[in-house]
Length: 426
Ligand SMILES: *Cc1c(COP(=O)(O)O)cnc(C)c1O
Image 1 (tube, rainbow, N blue to C red):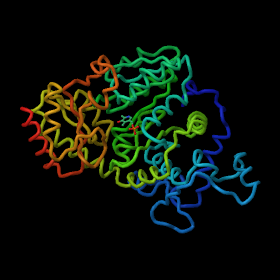
Image 2 (cartoon, protein in one colour):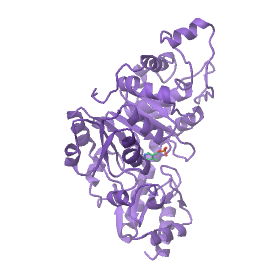
Image 3 (spheres, rainbow, N blue to C red):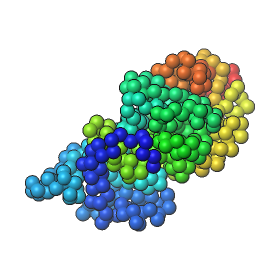
Image 4 (cartoon, rainbow, N blue to C red):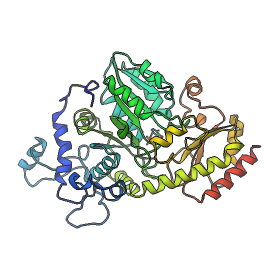
């Protein structure tokens, strides 16, 4: 792990001790002993990893809706605050339900540690701000979720952090953008909504050679389809609202990294700024993870079938699972399946709206990762907040539609889209 991006390293040693207390407190129970759980295969970790059972031996993970904790005596709490005794102290620092989610996500990701966040954007903001200071420089992929671009284009510069965006598919561009003060590479792959695919091994190697920390937004894939750390990524950040919940219920996020980075870099920021997830939302995501791989694989299969069916009908198709995608070979190499989301261009906004308005089964919705098929027009929704120039640069055209393919019978979704395209004259 590169040291270069770190703020003063022992900024909050107390926070680091709190973090370590969580797995230790649960060690004697099921699913949190790494010497056992790390031997499990991913499907087993998704169902059982991180499970901590109370003295009641409940089958399903318990929901601990509590903000604080009580103590038998004053010395106990003093010892916990001093980091000399195991145990919880306050839900901004530790919560048993949240800790179960964090341990499960870390195991599935192949990461040493994870901290859950209130939303995907809380996770991205935390992953960046916790390690950056005025005077630093960040290189980001130009194709990104609208709010991720907002962080690069508006938030970071307000705090004196310079940013450069590059065409993420241009392998040389990453190295060319590096300056002496570059601390972080930030990108998503596949990207929202243009499905740009970044060469993880290449970009992570360039970063490593320069002591730069890579932060990968893995929301479109999740560990079920792609594990960026296997290719050298330092930090993997999530919107768990998407595929991890998978049923459109809660906002959630997570940041995975080495134990050292989580303890020394992320935790002091999180502990003192509080972007924490609610225990209820963490519990919902825990249950979602049990079926993540099944859903992600089936939805990917449905998305490839649908993409193939309409490819000849639309002027432009952006789908990493199809041979027509410029990085199809790379995508299939670094992913186990290419995910439920793809985009296609129907020419102009009027035609795009006509397609959306003609849908009978697929919902008009800007969410993704859901078990329901959902479609949206990024230029007027997820990417409406950015400048026309930025939209043009990243290929979010007026005719672009993005679809999340769900778990419905693929034939029904195909028939619905077939009818909607016909109604729009395509
Ligand atoms: C949705 C999304 C986010 C933001 O996540 P929220 O949970 O909505 O805050 C970030 N990155 C990507 C790629 C996304 O799709």
